[in-house]
Amino acid sequence: MPESALHTETGPSLTTVWHGNTADGGLHIVTKAHFPDHLVQQVGAPAAVWTEISAPFSHELHVSIFLENKTATQLQEATWIRWMPDPAVVDTSSWLMYKLGRPWLSPDPRQAVHL
Image 1 (cartoon, rainbow, N blue to C red):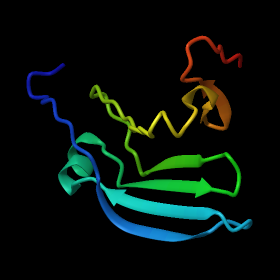
Image 2 (image 1 turned 60 degrees about the horizontal axis):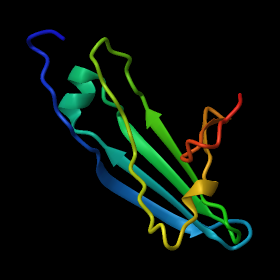
Image 3 (image 1 turned 180 degrees about the vertical axis):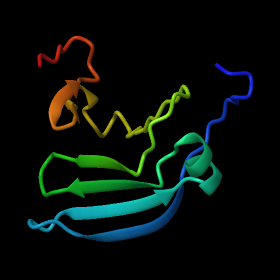
Image 4 (image 1 turned 90 degrees about the vertical axis):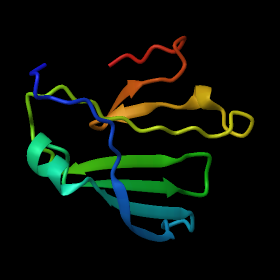
């Protein structure tokens, strides 16, 4: 890592929230958040982070995250989300994560995901 590179952990600031209903009457939420301008311009942070949460009348929850105008850089970087529902209420072993529309990861290490 170059000597001039600094480590920082910075989250985006929520700027807008929209809410409504899904076609079957469930909950639908869309949020938009922004990183500080200097991080977008100098180190390649996305211009905006869109999060879409859809909870239809079923046992499903759909979460999609879109990074708007994310610039590729040669700096080391990581992006993550943290989702921590109460395990007494949610069966986390039933979760399946999709990346780019394909099954990617199961939170239960005993369940292999075959691509």
